[in-house]
Length: 303
Image (cartoon, rainbow, N blue to C red; front, top):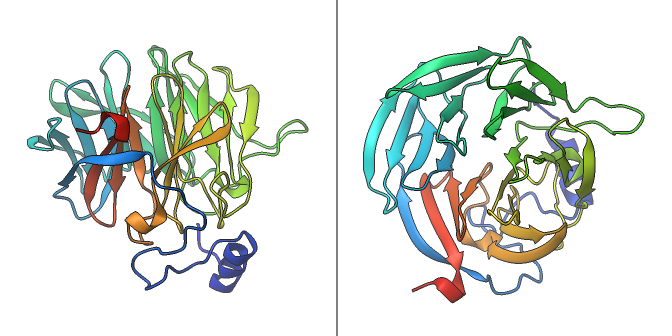
């Protein structure tokens, strides 16, 4: 579904100003003009999964999914609970009222009384869910396979589809299985448009309010075929993004580049799909290649 001719891909990477290889093939060395990160590493812990795919954060726990499992860690990174899942989960989220949802390629589940229960199924044969995010009213579903974002009304499970090309909207461009969504505090929603090298803010009815981002290797831009790959937000609606190729993590405030959380040189170039979560002060980053979670906090608050 997402296969592309490798020569074309390399050409796109170069044209977008992003080298397809790091300096030694393992650790990404290319991160031009990167300032000193304003965030520091507070905690890092390993995840006992072969293919970790997603994480979420609550007031007292960190959830990670992968390998047909939902893992629950305490805030110090100690594994507290392992729950079996009926599918290979791709992502997980926790709603503001504490409901835990996870998804496989075309199915969404809910954790109820300690067991993963089916919630809904996407009908598209191309479905490849890569992200979910919830408000008290809606569950938003990023389907990279069908190049769409779905909104499920949690009371009725009625689905509404967004992302199609119209005369007023260029449509979602998704060259690879990276499409992410995050609900803001006012129930607006942010989703990535990775082939367009931007992220977009929509209202709860899907209307595009604003978009920002550009194809550039510079810190305020996104390079390669499909970046940013992942997005999260602080409670003040500061936006956090991660990338592949140059696996860096950054923050944006009101559509403008704000801070470097972690430079590309901090991890392997193979760390594609760094899932993100955040609370009021901390950023949680799941590295699927290193199989660990890193907790970042602003250096002014680092003890």
